[in-house]
Length: 633
Image (tube, rainbow, N blue to C red):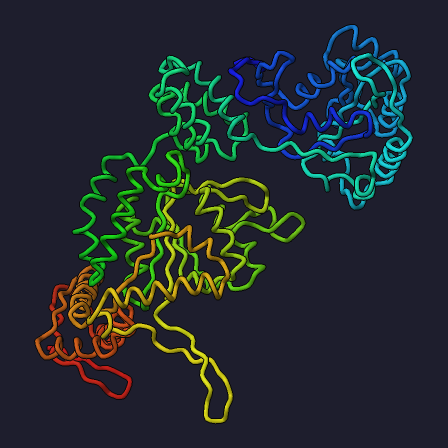
């Protein structure tokens, strides 16, 4: 595709940053251009026709040429000096000005010579030209501590900015214009502060990311190159153009060209599946696992599978599956926009400890990805300090660990199709929770290195104990005020009126986000995805007991080739021990089984000679203080 292409006009002005430079040519001697400087530029010619130009330098030239400028002198630290446009007449004019050859075959330029060249161009009385310092961020080794040669260069540049005077070179403008020096830098801080800060002769201009309107213009042009695109006039084709523009939110125009190339290269895509091409560009994978028939079949059969593993949480399982089906059908965030790129699914599991929140997350992972261990877990109690945000997204430049990136952003970059579990989210620092605002709304996050990571194919699961207990201020007998933690809901309330219990939990969660954290916007982004888990009842506890006991029996069979069975009295005793305290849920039942059965069984196996094939029959379980012993038949 050509570097300059005409498309229909819907945006009626040149880029604001170009207009800012144009308006300041008479007042500013130098410009620091930062931001999206490596992208293609959507510009407009004199007839108002939109065109996609190859680079910021091309766009600058189309702005300067009508003002009478004859050429651009371009310097970069690798190739030295060159001339734009590269024509014999422009090279001759610049070589006459500098007194030496430039362009192809010229040698690299020292900073001392470059300072002289800048002065020659800036003070040229008869030649209207501009100088672009490309890759200027790579000139100083350290902007805060420049070498002697670098310091002398930037001092000369600073002096030049104050000494430069505008001249009348053309009738195109009524005011005299500078021969400007334009610095292309990644960040303004890449140049010495004392050069830029407080210097009215140097103007900083930011090149923004393309707007929706600009992306629509580019999408309209790119669409014409696809065989399955007939005309931009039909409703269907306008819908495809809008989808392309929306799917590239936060991307550059260069990325849009890359997406079009990818869609064209993958013949099964084309314009009608441009969203798949955009997703492939974001995450690097063309195949969409969410459309895999095996995944859809597992989700469809998931209710039966999960209910056998997550016991006593029918309502939570059903709501989670509904959200998962919504994710698989691509309808997540459809109410906000038909082209939303939010995470595939978001779940907030609230409830007592040990009731199956983490287990349900594992089962959802196995349902979608075929392996319950194919998830990434973050214990948010480790992120209670504000500075620990660096662990998630990476340390900012200049800090230890900057080059290693963040644990969260690295995990999503490596496995974009995955489930990410944030355990005990209420224990994270409030500033860290702010990081989730962008993830939940836009499906992306920028790490400490400035790279964008996309969450559009991931499932996010938050777990929390919020709402089960509440803090209450009380005054004791001595008149002292203290905070007491009391139950907000009980097992009895859940059994009596589940709707009332869930309402209390939801109200407490809302109060926490609105009043304690002061972040109602995070609550709004969670929406109706909060899933409240019930307490473990005695009936549920017995089912969990059977599942966990079966796991132990299968492990003994696999490791020792022996069948473990419990006689009636032993099983009844073990069940009573396991169900003594249901407040710790299934995790408490597992701990009781480990203490009362697994530990004494291990002692017995150590005391016996290996007897593969011989049954292990437990007749009785006896308690001796805090220790349990088994009587084997």
